[in-house]
Image: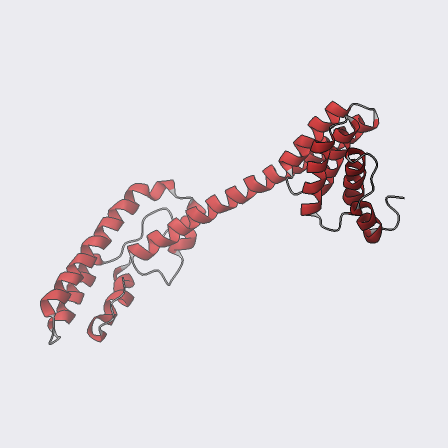
Length: 231
């Protein structure tokens, strides 16, 4: 909390006045009682709301003492290097500021740990995804379409925005004769990648089989996107 009255401006800036030599191993000493007394004395020089300001000064003093006691209990739990950093910060002039600095350090450490964990999980996810795609392709080429479907399904679970995995699983369903499931996967692939020529071609072929060989516009769309497909 900041004091805005000119007569009390010295309170916030002077809390460090009674500080003894600082070391990270011990909790710094700020002259809370002395600063509270000076705050009350400055309030007495004013002309308006003297009692309210005195009460405010005393409340701030009690709050600082409470924070001081809390820090004293927890001081040893803070990392020594972080304590040193916060104690050396000349901008910190009271226990509130010291606590804020220490809590920020704890939050930063937790954030760094979370980021490292997320990076490790992302790396593991990517490895598992690539392995699922590799296994799916190998199973598909070997004619193991059930295994291919299972592997591509795992790849989709790990990367639900991968259009190629949907297209590949659709091909496996098509080889098993499950054309409706194949078309559903081709639809998903096209939603994710609207210019996916091969998915348009595959969907066109599946639709053609369902419609007794009647051609459709998917194959023409595929050739429009990529002249090398659907020939």
